[in-house]
Image (cartoon, rainbow, N blue to C red; front, side, top):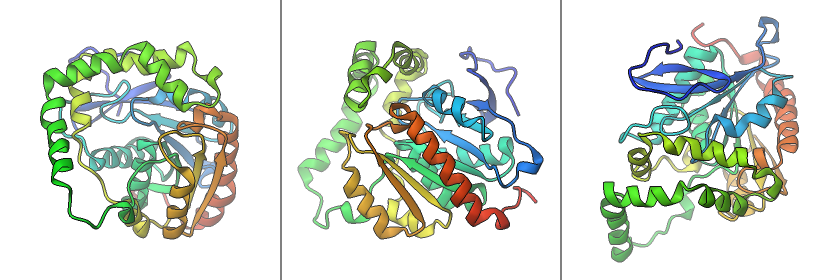
Length: 317
């Protein structure tokens, strides 16, 4: 299950280990202990980072939540200490990675919580791999709704610009130049300070945690490939398929999304949800960790366990 001999140099596991999956190394962190008599009253939590982040971004949450739950955090392919291939990225890839990790490593349905693109990946897994997921928590999760798309014919100029970006700007040399700029620690710090309410949480350690994966030799090619990844299903299409409880935690000071507009769309398409709005930015779990941990803990114990305990069975049974 854990990779012990890989041919290429890899960064050391951070409070975790490596799992071999489809020829890739997958890094994960682990805290807390699962006991047989806890199931299903204390389901395992699986935490999924956002774009450019890693398992390190959940350090505070794991330290707190491990007192009540077994907790895992996973580096998606292309990020953190996991492999960074130069092609092949898609929502299906990350969905399959999450579902197989739950099946092969955790061994029982998990509550999956994700931030930003990790929130969308959590939703995608919950909707299309229901046997693996007991509940989904999205923290400023991204993803388009079908009604947000224009009914008009695509603008030829906009389409041409989009293709130009894909074929030229994100070709090897230009994308390498862009990558050298965005991975600078000064740029990382400025970006984080824009999306955090509590500026004190933008520490040197956080900047280093975001910077370190960008030093991997595989990182520049992966950076270009990630921006060419396929789009996934519309959020409303996924909500139509999903049956498990959903928790939405919004950092309302997020400069990248209107959380109340997105909240209305979720409410329109899914009834079995609970949501909370916090004075936080795009990464509420790290911007306001104590509040997020309390909300997640209470929701799991009161809603996920309360609604699903009698129906859960271990995977593979």
